[in-house]
Amino acid sequence: MPRIYRCTRRSGKARFGAVRRGRYIALTMKINELFIAQLDRETDISRRVLARVPEGKPDWKPHEKSMPLGYLAVLVATMPGWIAMAVRQDSLDLNPPGGQGYQRPEWKTMKDLLAHLDTSTSQAREALAATTDEHLATPWKLLVSGRTVDESPRHQVIADTLTHLAHHRGQLSVYLRLNDVPLPHMYGPTADEKGF
Image 1 (cartoon, helix red, strand yellow):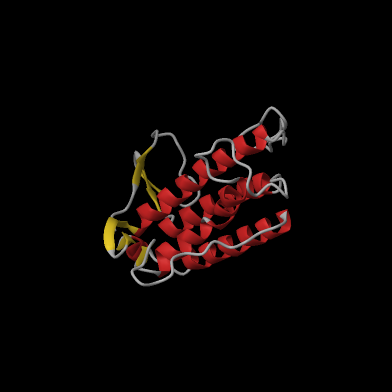
Image 2 (tube, helix red, strand yellow):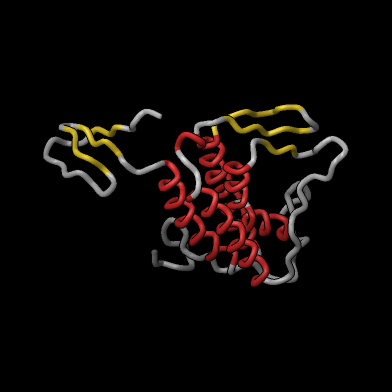
């Protein structure tokens, strides 16, 4: 895999994980290390949001076409596990012919949600720590009923998963607001929490 170079000012200093090369910095951080660092940041945010999910309202939704609160909350809690799947498996069939698809875990309490988050994050960290940049450049397939609907390098699938997680967590924050639940700080302060 080619090295990643980033332009910097001539007077700038090389940062951690980087080697100075004149006007450029050769980044020495591996892709899996970058994803682990991002996963850790995103997990902290997800934990703060999931800790606010009200119990006893799993079927609540803001609109008839929206997904229920309980489904959305467990989705946010388990999405980091998709990273482990992208590293360890070559594909996923959302509707396998003659087989049983993914079964989302059940939850009743906030403690259950946080346990699902801990499990899925642990699986993702372990898979990322054990992989290589070369493996992350290999293709991964998403299938529906045996038909390939997407084929992308694993590193792209992982990056998209982290973006997808932020999207659904943002969606969950709207659900919380509509239930008069104070929002924790995420990427910055909220109307309810001024801190970072």
